[in-house]
Image 1 (cartoon, rainbow, N blue to C red):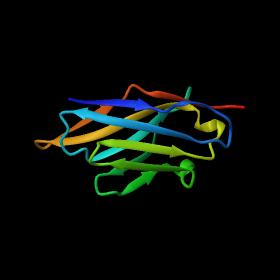
Image 2 (cartoon, rainbow, N blue to C red):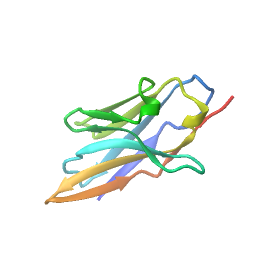
Image 3 (tube, rainbow, N blue to C red):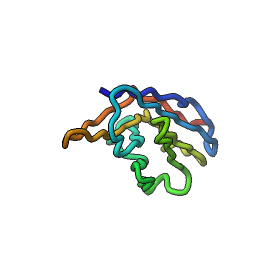
Image 4 (tube, helix red, strand yellow):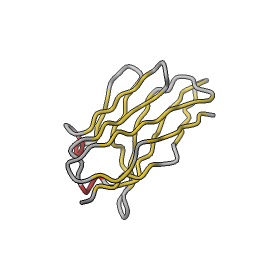
Amino acid sequence: QVQLVESGGGLVQPGGSLRLSCAASGSIHSLDYMGWYRQAPGKEGELVARMFRSGATTYVDSVKGRFTISRDNAKNTVDLQMSGLKAEDTAIYYCHVLDIFGGRSYNYWGQGTQVTVSS
């Protein structure tokens, strides 16, 4: 089992910045990728950003140029630096990791942290 602990959500004005952090602990193997999903009220969840162990990244189009994902493989942490925040970024953000071991994939989720962008 892998445990994920998130921090860094909150209330911010449009145009502001926030940094989300997620730390993984427990029976960690590959952590093939670490990333962030978000779920906004009345909308489908979406993958915001993820970073593979190799350093490759993916971002949803709506956050490109505004959000930056980073990870520390030695510390098993992943951060999401969010800038130029917009009201439509308001959502619960969940840390997600994919761990591969023994030929099987395991998905783990954090408890979620609220990000609210409002004036």
